[in-house]
Image (cartoon, rainbow, N blue to C red; front, side, top):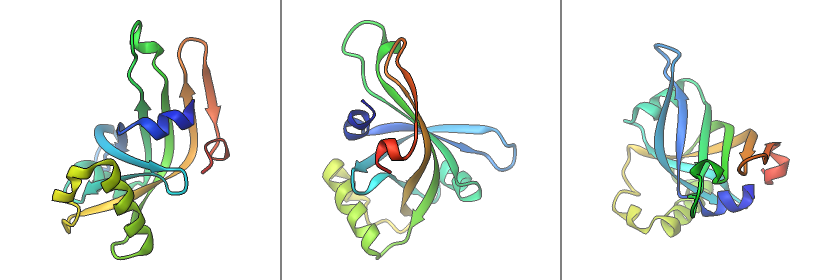
Length: 146
Protein backbone atom coordinates (compact mmCIF):
# COMPACT_ATOMS: atom_id res chain seq x y z
CA UNK A 1 0.00 0.00 0.00
CA UNK A 2 2.83 2.43 0.86
CA UNK A 3 4.55 1.71 -2.45
CA UNK A 4 1.35 2.35 -4.39
CA UNK A 5 0.93 5.72 -2.63
CA UNK A 6 4.52 6.69 -3.47
CA UNK A 7 4.07 5.66 -7.10
CA UNK A 8 0.77 7.47 -7.58
CA UNK A 9 1.02 10.66 -5.54
CA UNK A 10 1.99 13.89 -7.26
CA UNK A 11 1.60 16.40 -4.44
CA UNK A 12 2.10 16.36 -0.71
CA UNK A 13 2.17 18.54 2.37
CA UNK A 14 5.73 19.38 3.41
CA UNK A 15 6.20 20.43 7.03
CA UNK A 16 9.32 22.36 8.03
CA UNK A 17 10.35 24.19 11.19
CA UNK A 18 10.49 27.99 11.14
CA UNK A 19 13.86 28.94 12.69
CA UNK A 20 12.72 32.19 14.33
CA UNK A 21 9.79 30.69 16.22
CA UNK A 22 10.35 26.91 16.22
CA UNK A 23 6.79 26.57 14.91
CA UNK A 24 5.94 24.03 12.22
CA UNK A 25 4.97 25.29 8.79
CA UNK A 26 3.21 23.13 6.19
CA UNK A 27 2.96 23.82 2.48
CA UNK A 28 1.90 21.92 -0.61
CA UNK A 29 4.69 20.78 -2.95
CA UNK A 30 4.93 18.67 -6.07
CA UNK A 31 6.81 15.43 -5.37
CA UNK A 32 8.70 13.13 -7.65
CA UNK A 33 9.36 9.48 -6.94
CA UNK A 34 11.10 6.55 -8.55
CA UNK A 35 12.01 3.27 -6.83
CA UNK A 36 15.69 3.71 -7.70
CA UNK A 37 15.78 7.47 -6.98
CA UNK A 38 13.52 7.82 -3.95
CA UNK A 39 11.32 10.78 -3.08
CA UNK A 40 12.28 14.32 -4.06
CA UNK A 41 10.96 17.82 -4.62
CA UNK A 42 11.92 20.77 -6.81
CA UNK A 43 11.70 23.99 -4.82
CA UNK A 44 12.61 27.64 -5.10
CA UNK A 45 15.32 29.00 -2.82
CA UNK A 46 13.04 32.03 -2.34
CA UNK A 47 10.26 29.98 -0.73
CA UNK A 48 9.89 30.14 3.04
CA UNK A 49 9.75 26.34 3.36
CA UNK A 50 13.08 26.04 1.51
CA UNK A 51 14.68 28.61 3.79
CA UNK A 52 13.30 26.70 6.77
CA UNK A 53 14.69 23.35 5.67
CA UNK A 54 18.08 24.89 4.97
CA UNK A 55 18.20 25.88 8.66
CA UNK A 56 16.81 22.53 9.86
CA UNK A 57 16.82 19.68 7.36
CA UNK A 58 14.35 17.57 9.37
CA UNK A 59 11.02 17.52 7.54
CA UNK A 60 7.78 15.62 7.41
CA UNK A 61 5.76 14.87 4.29
CA UNK A 62 2.12 13.83 4.19
CA UNK A 63 1.20 11.99 1.01
CA UNK A 64 -2.33 10.81 0.38
CA UNK A 65 -4.52 9.27 -2.21
CA UNK A 66 -8.03 10.43 -3.03
CA UNK A 67 -10.95 8.45 -1.67
CA UNK A 68 -13.16 7.19 -4.49
CA UNK A 69 -16.24 7.27 -2.30
CA UNK A 70 -17.32 7.15 1.31
CA UNK A 71 -15.40 8.58 4.22
CA UNK A 72 -12.31 10.51 3.01
CA UNK A 73 -10.58 9.60 6.28
CA UNK A 74 -10.45 6.01 4.98
CA UNK A 75 -8.23 7.03 2.06
CA UNK A 76 -4.71 5.63 2.42
CA UNK A 77 -2.06 8.12 3.48
CA UNK A 78 1.62 8.01 4.27
CA UNK A 79 3.49 10.34 6.61
CA UNK A 80 7.25 10.38 6.13
CA UNK A 81 9.88 11.71 8.48
CA UNK A 82 13.00 12.58 6.53
CA UNK A 83 16.07 14.72 6.21
CA UNK A 84 16.09 17.03 3.19
CA UNK A 85 19.29 17.09 1.15
CA UNK A 86 19.97 19.59 -1.64
CA UNK A 87 21.14 18.09 -4.91
CA UNK A 88 23.77 20.19 -6.62
CA UNK A 89 23.18 21.32 -10.19
CA UNK A 90 25.16 19.74 -13.04
CA UNK A 91 25.66 16.42 -11.27
CA UNK A 92 24.52 13.02 -12.51
CA UNK A 93 22.03 12.87 -9.62
CA UNK A 94 20.57 16.25 -10.61
CA UNK A 95 20.22 15.17 -14.23
CA UNK A 96 18.44 11.95 -13.23
CA UNK A 97 16.00 13.84 -10.99
CA UNK A 98 15.38 16.45 -13.69
CA UNK A 99 14.46 13.74 -16.20
CA UNK A 100 12.17 11.98 -13.70
CA UNK A 101 10.53 15.27 -12.69
CA UNK A 102 9.87 16.32 -16.28
CA UNK A 103 8.37 12.91 -17.04
CA UNK A 104 5.95 13.38 -14.12
CA UNK A 105 5.36 17.12 -14.59
CA UNK A 106 5.90 17.99 -18.29
CA UNK A 107 4.80 21.63 -17.79
CA UNK A 108 7.77 22.10 -15.46
CA UNK A 109 9.91 22.54 -18.58
CA UNK A 110 8.87 26.21 -18.33
CA UNK A 111 10.91 26.69 -15.13
CA UNK A 112 13.16 23.64 -14.80
CA UNK A 113 16.30 25.67 -15.52
CA UNK A 114 15.62 28.60 -13.18
CA UNK A 115 18.73 29.21 -11.09
CA UNK A 116 16.78 29.88 -7.87
CA UNK A 117 15.30 26.34 -7.94
CA UNK A 118 16.94 23.15 -6.72
CA UNK A 119 16.10 19.52 -6.24
CA UNK A 120 15.91 18.22 -2.69
CA UNK A 121 16.04 14.52 -1.86
CA UNK A 122 14.11 13.33 1.16
CA UNK A 123 16.25 10.72 2.92
CA UNK A 124 13.75 8.69 4.96
CA UNK A 125 14.09 8.09 8.69
CA UNK A 126 10.71 6.41 9.25
CA UNK A 127 7.14 6.45 8.05
CA UNK A 128 3.59 6.01 9.27
CA UNK A 129 1.10 4.34 6.97
CA UNK A 130 -2.59 4.81 7.61
CA UNK A 131 -4.53 2.61 5.25
CA UNK A 132 -7.93 3.46 6.68
CA UNK A 133 -9.78 2.42 9.80
CA UNK A 134 -7.75 -0.14 11.79
CA UNK A 135 -4.87 -0.19 9.28
CA UNK A 136 -2.03 1.82 10.84
CA UNK A 137 1.61 0.79 10.58
CA UNK A 138 5.04 2.18 11.44
CA UNK A 139 7.46 1.57 8.57
CA UNK A 140 11.25 1.70 8.34
CA UNK A 141 13.27 2.95 5.38
CA UNK A 142 13.96 -0.72 4.55
CA UNK A 143 10.20 -1.37 4.36
CA UNK A 144 10.02 1.31 1.67
CA UNK A 145 13.14 0.20 -0.13
CA UNK A 146 15.02 3.33 0.89
